[in-house]
Length: 283
Image (cartoon, rainbow, N blue to C red):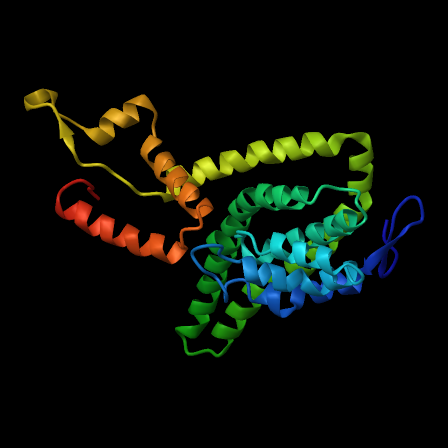
């Protein structure tokens, strides 16, 4: 339940943050700068942490160790359609409140973030990049080609009004969802099942990303004449995508061994060039 500016559950308990706080979060420098600190290792992690940091400071104001651990949790890998990041931020803030009260395991917030990234990005990218942006460009360009100043103005308005509306609505609803239902879910035991499902979904997302985003094609040939096969075809016959999956796990293992991501990127470029030159890899 929510009054004009406050969240109140069925037991009359008042939330730590208000609707106004969530609106500020949706419009702060972290929320609006999701792409600005993007890097190959953890993508939007710093911006997400910056977005919720003022709320973590308030939640852990008397617990510096808890605050440090919360910051560490939220500089983990994060990537999503930027307009939907405040929704995940709202849920994360409500979960951190429960974690600070020892009502929830710290790992649960990381699992929920990981589980939400893939599905929400699929929806968000389709809506904003595949639909609204195209419509806005079509309308804006039709005016701009006639020299009408309304062209860029209409493009800006058509794209940004729904984008900012979703940011604010998402942050408020994310926090309300977490505040109103997390405690109930935790007490009913549904949280454990939800965490298990989130873990399975996370593995599916990682598997899909490995298959769709890791491009490694082996060009080595086995056999001769009409029976010749590439090593890639042979391995795909055992399990499609096994090479991409193997490469993903190799990099995961190297990262756990604290090998620098920059070293891995440079080595990948060198191995790719040398491998392509000798025909080990093909495009």
